[in-house]
Length: 220
Length: 205
Image (cartoon, rainbow over all chains, first blue to last red; front, side, top):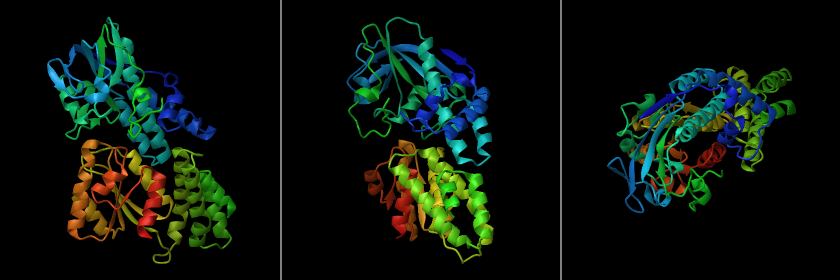
């Protein structure tokens, strides 16, 4: 089990990723919005300490819908399971933008500026996603590493987060999982990377998924 | 008056305040200022959003400018002399703490002339009903971002109907669809903050 915390300078959090999280996709915000993004990023990011924890466990693809991680059966369903042929291990992870970010965002919220609130929320999304990238960079084991997959996406029931969390110490990285499967801090992520010598790394799931009605579809 | 329209359309809160004061100096009534410049500006930015020409932050900037202008006008408006489009009680349902989307909808509704009672997050059916009664609300807006909490919306709809309240119920949130809204007996569904205003107005027309 490996647990890490990190801090970054504001410049290390790409503004373009914040714009994307704000819904701009391929467009560029006007100068005023760009300035606001930069100012809020410069205020929030130095206060944030994102964290992540991960472990590599034995894994097996049981069927077109089921897998086993560390002896426990999960049901990621058909879309995800179709990408897991050749999986022998899995890197299970939990990452979070952290309580420090959450506190800084709450302080900002006191100004009752809905625009700043929206931008701060988007920055939190990027910070949380950054933990997943860091985990992938950390991993230097043999074989291929897949894209990350998370409960709540690609038809994988979000309630299976409870099973995933049961494989970690209580409150991993300070993350609390509610009965309704809500992670707190809100800007947290959980899931797994599949590992295997013969595993084929697939492109980003939305690029190859045919579920055009998915509300989490991301045109990356 | 165009100056006020422009300020709100472009989301310039300080300019909107100045323009409102100028309009008042010119003996315009608060209600005329709202009806002739402010609401049309919000309608126009909403249309730009629907056309894909502007993004959520532009909507929010306009809503913020609208709010700051309204803060000047509200104390000048005597009770009963002005009308709102209706009263909305809004909240994120029990078990869910996501609030950004719900707050966007609240801002847009407020900016377009609704009185909004924002109950926050993790709101029970009892609290929704209590607030609707206290405020004589016309619409209850329910938000959820989790598939695990959206089912609670049906409990709220059922509880409101069982209570006999004559009130419309709107639902929204990323995992929801029109089909889901229909299946739980909600009166309206919207997939974004701007559309929520359109749906709310339609429900009360």
